[in-house]
Image (cartoon, rainbow, N blue to C red):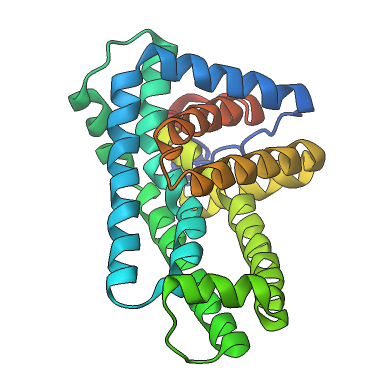
Length: 272
């Protein structure tokens, strides 16, 4: 009798099935961007409110770096902001999910959803993203000191050295190459893990492994998506982060729709 009960308990506590990864095509990229734009237009005030705070935070950090005579970290920090953007995008996931379900929008509902998700393993993913940014900033500083030394340069002098000297150009080439490798690694384990953790009751390791599997099984499509994000982030940098006000919400909403296309719907208890 005890053996039967034990067997029944074991069956009832069976591990949830692994997430099912769906095939993606290049046309999905255009479709999720269109869906992201549609969600942005459906709730522009909420989207601009979130992206406005993120953009203002970027400006404050850049001004602090300039104030403390660390202009060589401005570009790495601005570029590295993309590493933590998926966590900030949780607010856009909440907006898109509400629109998808036909639910009314409010700041309370949006931040309530983000708070609930952050209390689970989404918070651990935020630590992973923060650690990735920290490592990237350390590498950027080491590369700068290795190529250009420890001399204190103003922002104008720094630009002249980087763009007009052989060592500066080499630093620019190698720095961007290393940054691209780090960015793609972070992209691989985070592209669907953040919306998945927001949407389902799964642990962050499962979410990261699933994200990597999505990239591996849809190599061409995901490389195109990564390059698309990089180009849009470049537009944001060239605009002095102003472009983030619109591009960040569209990418955030689009990431939600990409996740919904890349991973089959959750079964039963997996749903948040």
